[in-house]
Each structure stands twice: as C-alpha cells, then as structure tokens.
Image (cartoon, rainbow, N blue to C red; front, side, top):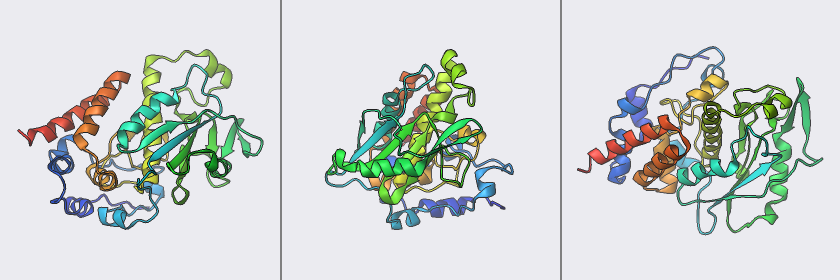
Length: 311
C-alpha cells in the first residue's frame, strides 16, 4: 500500500481554524513545530501504514464523529480493571501507570478497581506455548459487570492485564483493542517486557533493572494512553510521529512518543477543554518523578515555547 506523507497544506487543513482558541493552545499547536515534531520516516514493508489504508482524521471529521467519549454531567470516570496477577517482580504497578492517565485526561476521574482473576468463562487459546485470552470474552465481562460499578459516573471502563491477548481468530496477538461504541477496551502489557517471550520461570527469576523498568513504564503508559484516546474518538495519526501512530511491531511502538502531535492535541482539546500549560507542567513533574528523562525534556521544551509568547 503506497502511503503518501501529508504536506504542510494538508496538515494545516487537518488542524483547522484555530483563531478562536485560547492563546496557550494556539501556541501549543503552531509555535516552533519543526523543533518538536518529526515527520513519519520511510516505511518498512511490515509497518502499520504499509498494511493499513489510513486517510488521516481532520479536526472537522473528528468533531463529526458520534461514537466517542465525551464527559458530561456526572459521567466523567474512567475505570481501570486489572485482570490476573500483577504481583511478580517484572511488573509496572497499575497505580503508577494511572498517574499518567489522570494528567493526560484532565477533568476526568480515574479509578483503579480491585484486581480480578481470570474466570472459566473467559476464553483463551494456546499459541506457540503462550496462553492468549480473547478480547471478546473480556469485553463481555466488562459489560456484564457494569451494574457493579457506579453507572452514573462511568464514562469508560478498560481492562488491563499481564496476560497475552488476541482478537478472535483474526490477529495472532494485539497490544490492545477498543470498542468505542460500548466505551470499553482491553489492553495487554505482556509483550512490553524486553525479555518477552521468555518463559515464566525466567521472568520470575530475572531482576528488573532500571533500564528495563524505564522501557516497560514508557511502553505501558503509551499503550494505555493510545487506546484510551481511541475511546475519546481519536483515530490513527498520519501527520507527525505521534502517540496516535499505528504500531504493527515493536519498532513502531517504541518510536511512538508520549505526546500528541498538534493535530491530535487539537482534537483532544476540543472535547476536554483543558489548560495545556497545566497539563504540560504536570507531565514535566511526573516524568521527572519516574525517570522518563526524554519525555521530561520534551514537555519542558514545549512549555518554554508556550511561555515565550506570553512574555
């Protein structure tokens, strides 16, 4: 499939008219972009855009999208449902990951539910010795247990697991999948460990180095934020290297940054109406807290770009 990278005119059309936006968000999506945002690289044969036809979602098409999460009245809570064990040494704790979710989606409440075990009704298959749970069974569980959560608060509910997952018989595996119309998603962190697909015995006996901790934290946060953004209506991005790029392999996943490009940022802002400076300042602090130095530097640089215009 021949992907044609968008030119400057096409990107500007995707971004739309920003003259009515607050000054800070205007600057966030226009100021010194060449210093902070990179174009997509030349594609390999197995990359996402080599396999999938993606037209690119403009702000106009995003705003016309009906199937997307929009916080309103009391419906502002994102429930995170851990499934299966998270209690072995090579795991990024879910409560750490959701700190990033709280900052990324301001105005939403984020609640971590108690961990549940896999039940007999959750279907799985064995693939090359790896047990893979079907996303459909996990969707069914989330739907059937909605009454146990606060229905007047629930905006979204997503399951996270350290088990491998698959999408029926279509794909061999998946990092995650969102069912936008139902406001649910399923995300697996199984393949985010640099040691994958090592045996359980190897994983349990190998200490988590700081280098691997940083890699896994970065990957876990990116996977969850990417898929949650799908539930908020954002489609895969073709405009820059962006958190919302599709990923068909580990190289593409690691290339995804922990931030939205100007076009995608504009889309999320149109729904959540956040203070972009507050979001970026909080990300600087959180990335510093957990050792994500590349991301801390990037967010600080973008903050400087916004603040330069307000002097």
